[in-house]
Image 1 (cartoon, rainbow, N blue to C red):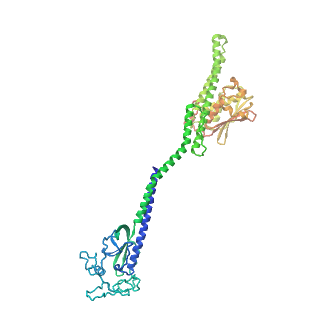
Image 2: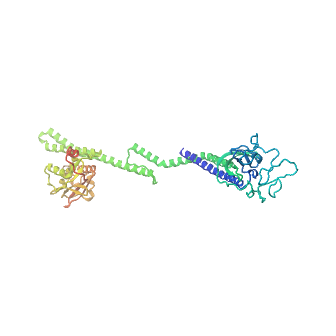
Image 3: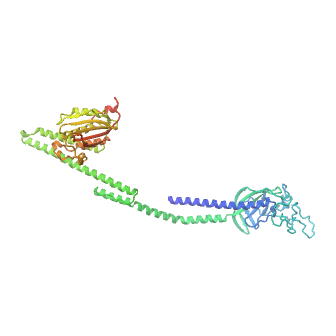
Length: 535
């Protein structure tokens, strides 16, 4: 439909331009013919003595609407303002500026007198026969063209150049086209359409006449009609070709999309996230769609696999303390004197911590983020958390902290600090150092120990869930393997990073980098909120 509308609009525009060009050409032809006749009149040739051929049709009309001259074989004309094609005679016309003697008689100006008209010489255009029948034509035309004919010149050229004396001298040469009209002309019994140009000219005798000359419009009508028929005949086949090509190209372009849809439907039905959609070899939007779809499937597969592994590891970690606690309770029920109450309490505490860790991971996986307007003084947080810790196996020392403020949850950042310190204490030999630094618009929370450190190949794997290195596999000393994973997830939710490297004395160094924000203003709601809850 769009192509059809465009083609119709283009066709109408082409026809309009063609019609305008042909009309302009007809205007040029008719204007040139009218100027040529008007120039002859201005040069001194009386309208009655003009020699006009059949083509183009010409009609000379005076200011009273009387026809003064017409072209040969012109039988009828319209569009010139005067339907008459019979010119008046000089006797009917009378002298310039005066009404002709026969103007009030019916039919005067439409036909010549019954006895014909005889013209005198150039100095007496109204000199006619006095009625004496002497058997000879006494009209003198003032040249050697022969008796009974005066063409207004003396050189036998048949054109009056205005050289003769008297009222038919040189007039004003016309240069302006008064207007163009459409009309018809019947020449030698054949009627056709014409474009008429009108040129006003003043004769040397002071009489104003208008020359109407026509140019045929038959060629224009035929050309426009031919083009119109050709366009109408070619419109339907062209639309069919465009529709067919569009359908084929669109179907070929969308074939890979159908392949992607079919494969995605099969993946959904089979729940096999290891399958991938076909990627076309082209470098277009559909190929990028296929690659993005495969990347999404890969991320989904990894997420599902991580979730399955998490559930399996969590079940394994929960099964051991539950089995130990059950055993102790059963032994205590059978032999109360053998009940290990401290061991049972330790297993319950371990279960409680594991359940809290799993709940926090679930909340982090759900996309929980800290309030953006909450502010935490990192140095003050370190002082408080280290002060409330119970005595550890090795001393935990705090360096000179830098006063920096970060955005985040006080409870969750305290959990990160506690997990890092617990991990450092578990591996340290003599001491653990905690410091707060400011560097390039970032706050750095650094925890270092003097233990064996973390091998370079294991520095990313230790942040995975339920991962413990070989020398920390003991469930009593090594934990469940969730502390570092929780710490990194919390730091990422705070728009920060957690990395591990080598300390100066060979142990492990954990760096938490967080963006620094403005310090809290006393009395500000954010300052009051940062001390509420544990996130």
